Amino acid sequence: MARRIRANVFDRRSRTRFIDRLKEKELPEDWAPHLYHAWLILNSELRIPSQSSKDIVIVCVEAAHDYLGAQSQQLRQIVEGRSQEVVLKAATQVANCIKGAPAAVRRSFNTEVLPLIQVSTIDLEVIESLFDAAESILNKCPSYKRSEGALKAIKRLQIEFPALGIDPRQRAETAIAALGKPSKSKQAISADDVFYVLADSLNGPVQTRPTTRCCALIRDYVYEVGAVWCRAGLWPGRAADHMDPTYKSRFHRFAELVLTEVVEPNARRHLDCSEALRQEIRKAHTRLPAEIRPSVSSAGRRMDYEWLITDRDVKHAQARLKTAPQKAI
Image 1 (cartoon, rainbow, N blue to C red):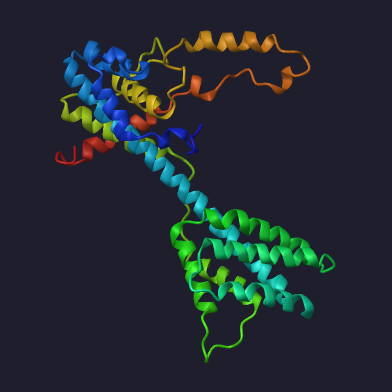
Image 2 (cartoon, rainbow, N blue to C red; image 1 turned 90 degrees about the vertical axis):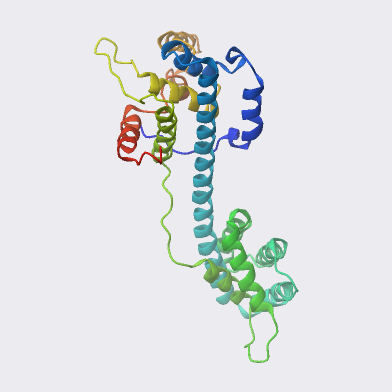
């Protein structure tokens, strides 16, 4: 199953402080279990000196933090793109509602909304006051048949507009500020113009939305770890054992352990026997009351049995390493 990006609380962790704590600890035994097992692969299985093994692990931890930051940035772009689409549609709906409203309702909008944009600076607080004023007016005229849909659109604006990225929000603020500036040549404006201008400021060229899958980011991380291994004189290979289908190469296990500690440090897949863990979960599931048992899964947490890095990810990174210039590695 393809993994998808998701919000991760560990992206708030200070990368510099985390790395400094690793460097301060002289013994790798004092590290977190995942990183200690990664160090053992280098020191015990590949016979790399202790300090060199520590240095390799620390550099790869930095690469894992880069992956986490890239995932957060991609998620932010997706959220901001969706918010922009919602704000555009909602602002257009409110503008159409005001334009088609009875004269008395339009006058109320003009009286309440237009003075709000005739200020020296348009910022988030001013725009939120526009939404609040429009909501207040619509609540006062429930007999208007389009007010219910417009109120829902206002609610969406109140939620999604603050979630816009810096650039689209600045465009909206600049456009509304220009609309509110007095000018002899400018025609009289109305409240619906404010929401039409807001929608137009966000109606730019359609950009490709980032994918929700994170396989490309994981492969970039595996490539970076592979480059570190190559610089250390190690080959980041793949391996298979027909007697044990679950067997992974040292490089695959190393990259997985480092990434797990940074992304999912509470995962148990590499620290406990997966089969024993599944049996434990199944036994706990059978002890549940019969009436709630069908609604509770007995499969366990995904992070406790499914690896972050697949064999295909390692294969893809290997191909890049073979074709990459030596200086790039």
